[in-house]
Length: 111
Length: 122
Image (cartoon, rainbow over all chains, first blue to last red):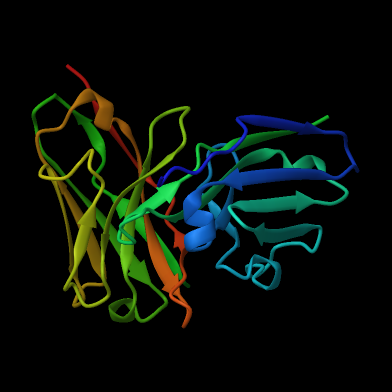
């Protein structure tokens, strides 16, 4: 399957830790990238490649971390801040390897 | 300044055509593949098309294949999206994005434009 599955919404209390997941065969076969999108803005790259843990994009705060295990990619935010409230998308390749696929996105609410 | 700037969006009727442009600056455009990604209002991201760095390969989402054409002009650091036979469900913000890769064969979109809105309505 080329689908990437994300929970539609997740909430976290201010200052607490939250994990957002992305599941699919493409994660296992290829990799997963993570993007953050705030209202009215373009997506912003957070993590990339099969070695998510080591590939934080430039300028992304250290409270964000990425990890891939099997068919699941995880984005963890430690000590979540109000400004982390956003939509988060994962992406990878489809089964052909030539097309890009996105997960449905997860809306994070910081309470 | 490293950036991508889209233009060409607007309000059009179903069945009509529109051409979007994306001008790149601040980097060596000819060494990068480029994508179009769209987002319907209130919805998620949907990949549309990619053109390789050398223009030799182009791939399209099934939803636009046969109607949309991606192209690039390295002389002007510009990519285009020619959209024909537009439908109401093509209504979206259209973003161009730069493709980055590593020696493991991983790809990601590391630079995005601010988007241009296409609205298809009668």
